[in-house]
Image (cartoon, rainbow over all chains, first blue to last red; front, side, top):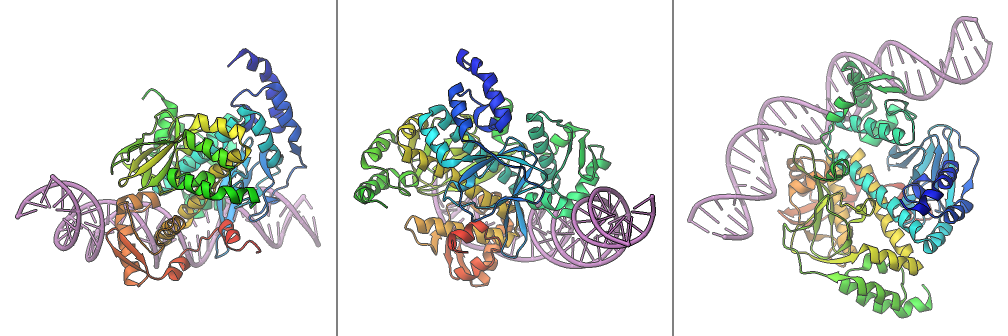
Length: 254
Length: 254
DNA sequence: CGTAGCTTTGAAGATTTTCAACCTTAGTGG
DNA sequence: CCACTAAGGTTGAAAATCTTCAAAGCTACG
């Protein structure tokens, strides 16, 4: 990190803490004046209540959204009417990236709890990116990260047993909470068993049974929405599907 | 489409046909001189033979790759050693988008048949994008499209029966061939039952049985790698999981 | 022509889903 | 303050689906 960036870092952090743009600006020091320009286009809205929609599938796409606090699920409907959850979005995570493609939201987004959101007008973000190469680079990285994450998820769904999926899901939540400064081993699920099942391709009963079994095996302590991870080692050991990418990130020398 | 773009279209098509950049430049008219600049950074390599690796997981990322002819699979290894297919890439499709994130390839890519590839040095593409706003926009769309596609795939894997997955897979191939000017109803699979199964999260025997059943039901004609779709209607009817996004794209008024 | 690598097919076994009942909790209104 | 209700969660048993194991067939290639 260069001298210049050290100077700007505090300001960036403040701006990011405020507007939850860490996904965009934390990974790489933008110049302070650029952060100000980015900050200037961010809209802050009143918080969403549980059940409120942030956007619906088919609506025109104008903004990217960043979760500030709370949690959001994204989902589609199947032809036979039920809901298919395609993602959960925690603080610091970005929504709407799939809609850049054709200017229409491909899924709906709904708050799982009281949730604060920032809006980024995408056109203005594009303009800014043209003028700030490091912001453009951040945008590419942001989109690429999503692709990378999706590929891991597909590999998980494509291969795994119910046990492995649930273990993987818990580890993913744990890591995401940790990254945002929350406890990695003690947290509340804002989504129902139904929603977890839909996301993981399992019946809600299967999710419930696995939570019970993990608890019997002294790996977790689960009480409704409250989860405590007792034995992270064994939870990780259940996941045979660490990808090459994850291996290399964990230990780049191999 | 503006007058200016009409003029440039032929040239673009020629350039794209040559370098397989249609993913980047066909969806939106770049100015002719911009296409030339894009064309100038494209490298053309000797073709890959079946089994050759294009890149391996963990290798540093320098280029995006566009399939010109042939077919490529991307895959990761699981901890217990077997291969997990995460994607198939047909002519006109782009590989490596997941690696922008951290500069390392997250999966390996291997030719399924004799395959011609274009290389796009990513750094130079970023430079160009900074200077050509419409190219930047294309890049965002390209990445977004991949995210959109992955979300559909996740929804498919998360929900469906074996029947639905195989039907969906065939429809996807059919549409991709069609888009590139090949027959939508008569094509050759360049991948094995094993690889299809890995991709769809099914045992290879399950894939084989479903091909047989679809044939018995007069929906397909399958002879090893050669597939003919006899009854596209019924094939489509098997897929309950048309997403909102797909519905809206098919019929934007609803 | 023989062998290796797919592919197909059958049967048994395992996992997961479905259906049904019951339990728990949080919120509501008497 | 308590009872009631609705929503979500748990548990059991039966049924469906998919996988695994095993064997045999086919094709392409050397």
